Amino acid sequence: MLYTVIPYELIFEKRDDINNNYFETVIENKHLLLEEISKNCFKIIRLYSTNPCDYLDIKFNPGTIINTRFI
Image (cartoon, rainbow, N blue to C red; front, side, top):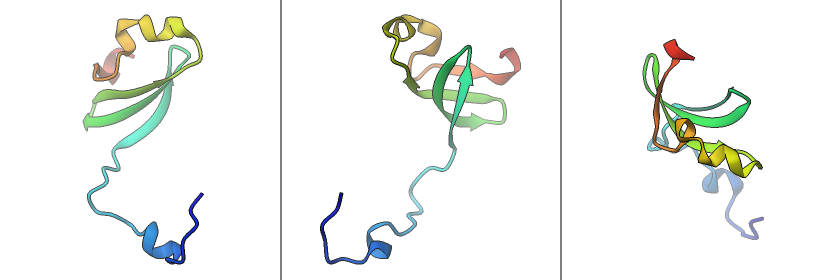
């Protein structure tokens, strides 16, 4: 929550340096935040899970490159 006299439009104005290639998806019942590197290639940015065992699966480590042809 922001308590400020600065207008909302100035605080949250569109920035050109923010990468818009991120999206969320579900693969093998795991919720992932992916970054598109190329047409069929994605890098895992974040895994969303409440199950600790999901974080031990090396296929879903952040930084892992996945190819959509094999999904």
